[in-house]
Length: 135
Image (cartoon, rainbow, N blue to C red):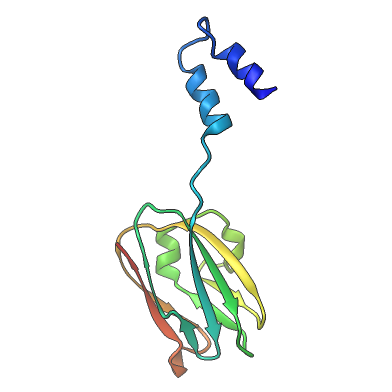
C-alpha cells in the first residue's frame, strides 16, 4: 500500500521534493542509539567514568544492583544535553533516582564538549563519584 502511494505521489508529475519527503517518512530510519550501560552497586558506579561523542545519540541504561537507593547525579551534564525522555529525570532535571533493583533508560544527545561531574547525591561522601567526558 505504501509503495503504491509512494509511486503515485513521487511520479514524474509530482511536485519537487515529494519523493524525498516520502522517502524520509517511509524508509529512512534513525540509526539505533549507542548503548552505554552503568551498574550501581552500593557506593560505586561501574564504570565510574563515561565518555560520549558530541552529536551522537545514546541510550544510557542504568541498573541498581545495590541494597540502597542511589542517584545518577549530573546536573550540568543533563542541562547541556538534549534529553529525549526527561520524565526519567527528577523534577529538577539534575539526577535519575534509582531504587534497589531498578532499571532505567535515558535517551539523549550530549551537549557541549567538556568534563562533567557525576556522583550519587546520597553517597558521594563514601566515594560514589565519577565523571563524564564529552568529546
